[in-house]
Image (cartoon, rainbow, N blue to C red; front, side):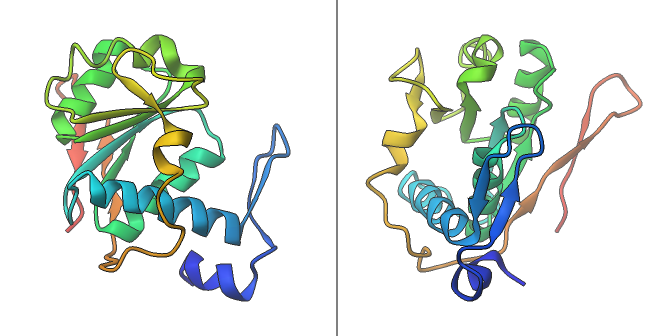
Length: 175
């Protein structure tokens, strides 16, 4: 069942429970937050089959970012948070991500990316206090956007990367 349906039928039930921290996100919260990011993606000009990249540790914001990609028809690529800046930049560039969302916890890697990824149009950082180099703070960036679904919801999906056989990861685009 689509998470948006659970947001109305099971609004207060947990959609995500982080095992290590116990942080919980209900279906209603996930729906509202993902919709706000979905609206930001649309306002930034992203349409079906465009790409975003997500570089952060496992947390509720990561789920929210993936869910926003799923409801806007974009490919979202989750980048292993243990990669080096060069390795992460390779994936950002190869996936042709137009927006990169990272977290303050991965700041050391994240701040090295803008100079390596000149085609990225927008940089967002979760849990940032303010602007950090090329990155805008995520929370204030999504705050003005509505919590209802975008008008043209379309199914998006993850763009996964294999380990490759040539020493470079290979992007796998599902139709």
